[in-house]
Amino acid sequence: NAGVMQNPRHLVRRRGQEARLRCSPMKGHSHVYWYRQLPEEGLKFMVYLQKENIIDESGMPKERFSAEFPKEGPSILRIQQVVRGDSAAYFCASSPLGGGALPYNEQFFGPGTRLTVL
Amino acid sequence: QKEVEQDPGPLSVPEGAIVSLNCTYSNSAFQYFMWYRQYSRKGPELLMYTYSSGNKEDGRFTAQVDKSSKYISLFIRDSQPSDSATYLCAMSAKGAQKLVFGQGTRLTINP
Image (cartoon, rainbow over all chains, first blue to last red; front, side, top):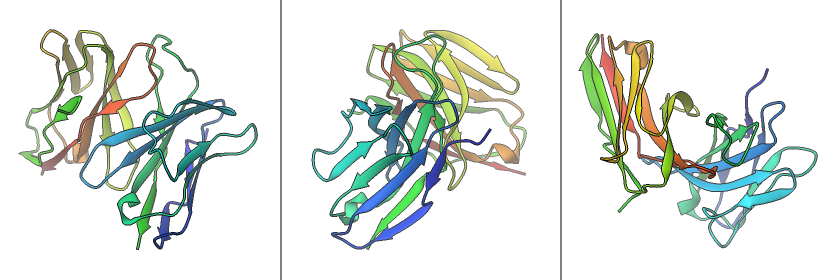
C-alpha cells in the first residue's frame, strides 16, 4: 500500500511565478491536510480538505494561496506570485476519517515538497 | 505566546542514555497528544499518541501527559544512533482535525 505521494519533491521558482504542489493521499483516505514547515520551525497547519470541499482553511494566508481536492485526481496547493518568504517545505497528510472520531485519527504524512523561491 | 512550546535543542547524548523530550502548551482544549519523529529531508512519522492524561509505553518509548500542568514528555530508553532525528510534539482538540506542532527538538545519539 503506497503512502502519501507528493510531487514534485523539489521546486524552484522565481519571484512572481506560480507554484503548484500536488498530493495524492493514501488509498482509501478521503481527508487531506496541508502543513508548511519553515526552516528550523515546526509544522504549521494551513488547510484541511475533503473531496471537493474545504473544511478548515484557518491557516491559509489570505492572498495568493489556494487549495483544492477535486473528485478525481490529487489535491493541489497553489501559490500565486511567489515571494522569497514562501520558501519552505510543504507537507501533505491524509487520514481515513474526520471529525473527532476515537481513537485518534492518525494523519499520515508525505515526504514533502521543498519550494525555493529565487 | 505560542500555543505549543518545545525546546529546539540541539540535544546530543551518548548511546544507551535515557532521553527526555518535553513540550508545554497553553490551550486547555487539547485532548490528543502526539509525538512525531522526522528524519532529515523526510516527512514526520507518528511515534506515539495519548488521549487525555496518563502514560503510554511502547518498547523503548514512553509518553506522559500531565494536563494539570499542561506538560507532555517523551522518554527514550537505551537510546540508539538510529534514534537520531528531530522529534516534534503535536496536539489537537477533540473534534478538531488540525494538529498544532511544537518547534521540534533535534536529537543526536552518539555511538
